[in-house]
Image (cartoon, rainbow, N blue to C red; front, side, top):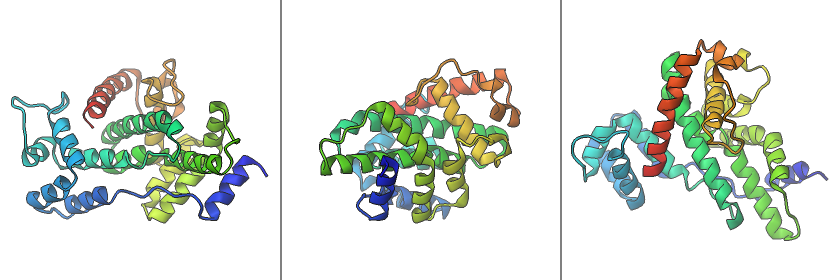
Length: 275
């Protein structure tokens, strides 16, 4: 049986602990969508000290800092705005999803989380420019590689069962390429996330990207932007973004893309330092 088949078997047998979308992030999203009072939003966030601290730090970061340092969540949320608050809470909460039973995977998990945050920010910027839903794009960008987390968790479980089983980084990346899109789509079906997000996860590496829906093309280009910035498992600073067919299909030229790239770089650095 191939390793791909073994992983599929382990998942179908229910022996792999699948990631769970963080409850606090879901609660915050629900409150914001239903225009809940600020006090209710603060109450939910301050229940988790680490989350509240990260949000304050983010509000005082270079990307959002005002004239005075702020020290309470009411002011932090007011300064950030509801959309940025939701994104920050989701990003911080998702860090707990980027975990593996094997401590040897910690560095790789951090790389995946960093890449996902950058792709989310790039996808949001692209969506704002292209007339798509920025919130949907951010969530799709943040979750686009979730299948890789499932693969890592599966491999870690299999290594625990058989310590002699070891995978090189090259072999692991081959598994990622083979499985992460389909596994991610399957996981999102369990999470009951919108079809559009499942499409982003499933199709962001499709060979016929220019024929895919706008939201898929946005995440695909955001992924390439992160690689160009060096924030990727496979960084490539030689990528010429405006020559990519998917960039042309979005009507984006060299000057505009380079400007967006710099914007995303600054936002990503600020977000990751704070969160």
